[in-house]
Length: 336
Ligand code: LMR
Image (cartoon, rainbow, N blue to C red; front, side):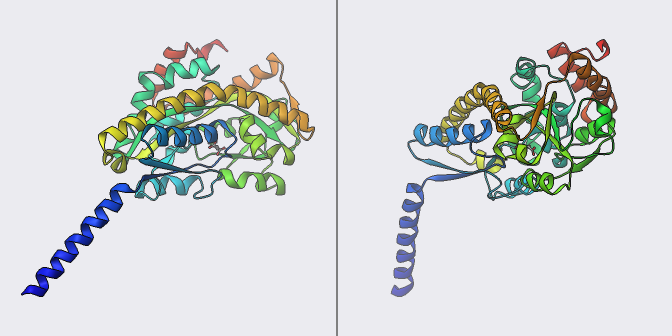
């Protein structure tokens, strides 16, 4: 009888040692994203990792994996849900396939005139309500991070909507963006971000849309000839975590991470415009892509084609949601 007791004691002792080791080991948060480290999102993610370590006294280690190093667009959302990574910041255009279509409201062309407009939505009640729709999917939405306003680039000049007719344009996985391209009679091609450079280079697609920071850091301007500053839509992010993981954190640690997230959100939203302005200057200086600023009249022609997309997509995105955004920003679709 002595032997089993001894074994039990030994097992308990080993268990205790393991528990001590486990308690000493930091909690690891794998934070995967698809853009370069040198972008608004990349910088905010790195800053979050730094502040998380500082505020938790190294109890939490955030490992940031930029540039689709771990997962591409679609896989990263699946990886989050099964807990293979704990944190992501996908663009708002990528939540439709999860079944949360409200996020596609952010893709509606010309719905936001500037960052102030946008913050009235993301930093207010509408933003909070949209994030809460992720909970039934096992995801907690922590914050909105800015990037910037998208423009069309292509391997041909674009001055009018008609120029895009019949041309293949890469888009993110959003039904609103699909409709946006159809409204211009272009051919939308959904593609992961990591594949865009090569698709532009080899002519698999003729053009794309992105804010300057994404174009420049992926060197897309080296494989495009023209960029027209249509600034027709917004691209930004929701920072999200696996709900089970988040709920399982010690309360004090979760509070410290919330603080780190607050600070990182401030940073992201403070640097986004400047990063995009600098990237645009870099594209211009490269001499590889010709940058064109459309006249007011030319811009209006794009608006007239694209704003009807709001109505067309209302049944998908939500009529009430669109109306509440109009109310928050003062946007008047009929004023065109
Ligand atoms: C894209 O796919 O074009 C963007 O969503 C990439 C990003 O995360 O900014």
